[in-house]
View (cartoon, rainbow, N blue to C red):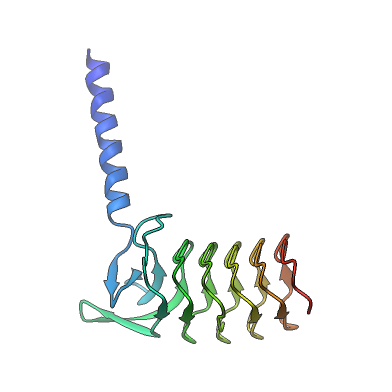
Length: 186
C-alpha cells in the first residue's frame, strides 16, 4: 500500500512537471513573437508558443523580427531563432531577420509551405538541420559570407528551389542538405 501511494505521488509530480513545461514554452510574448530570455547575457531567442503545434503563429503571413526587445524594463538583443520556432507556419510568406541574429536553429521554418523568399543577414554563421525543410514555395536563396555551416537536410524537399548561392565561407555542408531539390539548377 505504501508503494502504491508513493508511486501515485511520483506520477502526480511527473504529470505536474510535464504540464508546467508545456504551459510555459516561452518566457515572453512581445508584439506577437515568442521569446526565451537570457537575463545573464541580456539576449533573446525567438521561439514557439507550443512545441510542434501547427497553431503557432497561426494565420500570420509576415513577420519582422526586431534587433532588440524590451521586457520588464530590460532590453534584450535578439541573437537567435531557436529550434522549431516557426515549424508548420503554413501561411507565413515572408520574414525579416535582423543583423543581430547569428544562428538559425534546427527545423526553424520546416513545412512553411507558403514561404517564397528569405534574406539571411550577414550576421548568421549557422543554419541548422532541417531549417528550411519542406519549404515547397521557396524559389531562391543567397547564403551570406558569414555562414560557415549548413546542417543536414537544411533545404530538404524545397521542390521550387531553382538556385542557391553558397559562399566560400561555408566549410561544412552536412548530409542531404539539398536532397530532393529536383529543380535546383544552379
